Image (cartoon, rainbow, N blue to C red; front, side, top):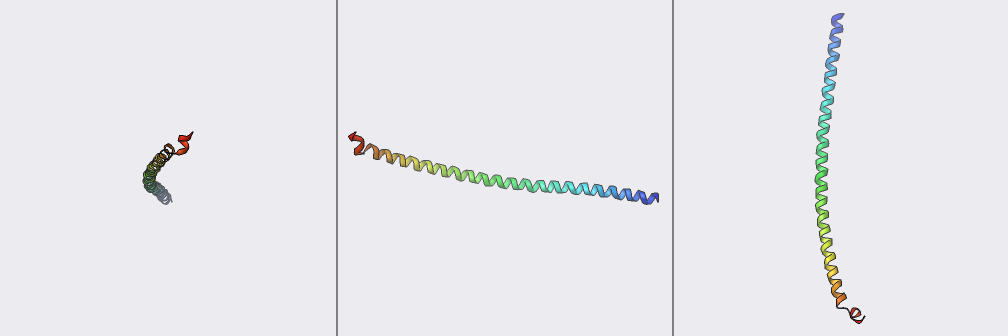
Length: 83
């Protein structure tokens, strides 16, 4: 009977170790997929940042061109010189 109890204890100990190893594997593999997902999101945000910078530069150039045109019309306007 003692031998049987000893084997049950050893089997339980082996199962506990196996469960612990499985948990560690699950955590580390999940951590790897999480890291990969974060890296993908970082790349996406960097791409969006570049696109936004380009868009802002275009808007700034258009605003400068419009302002220059408006100034030209204002300074050559009859209404400005008649005041």
